[in-house]
Length: 315
Image (tube, rainbow, N blue to C red):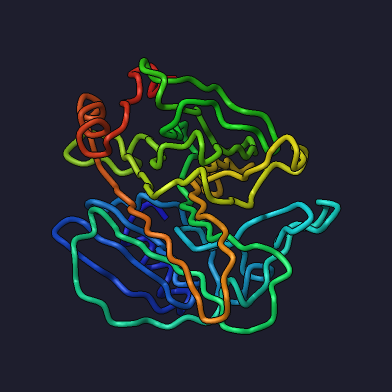
């Protein structure tokens, strides 16, 4: 769904309730019945996030991936994984997680050019958990045309599966970028020791304004603590080779056309919680619609990170 109008039309045709927040030209749409995910956000008419052509509240196995931004849990696979079977051949989602059972709560109005997002993990019962759990925030983004995932940090990400696409670094060596486009599936991650807290996706706008086609930058920022435990790691790395999991991850899907999407993913540490305890993670999501000449200033001044080299945004 490329635009806000398209998204609203889809939600209403699917009979899925939604909440809208507006601030000037900035907007955000949340669907409580779809695991309280942010279905869309943007500046002007264009939706910065990816949403598939068909959505449903019947659950992942019947309705499929609803796109947008959602809270997830980690690890995905391996011995203690939540989604992959032990042999890695089967992937499944419990209906209690997605779509889950959520309801809208009143909240004070605020600016949404920068979306402040908090999710919290709590232990309600007294039964010991069989595994550690880490919160996982991910945003799905459209990439039927080529775009660039960028990650603040000094090292190339490690591969989970697939093949890493064309990759480069900034002039100062503190930003890594990957050129992505739907049709090629891969997943890669960066440890909390290497990740500097901010990652994002840059692409050409799909909806021109005033005859111009600027870039849309969608970023996600959060704390990364190398002294804490993170639980999502490549299955082939082994504990000895990978004593800690990843705080940031990038994914690109094999879908093409309207089903082409990639993801930027932020992980929280996995705490040991006593009954009644909880731990929250704060995420800041930013969306900017910029001319190519404005990207460097935006990244350095607003995001506090090394800008992408101009060559990263050209084929």
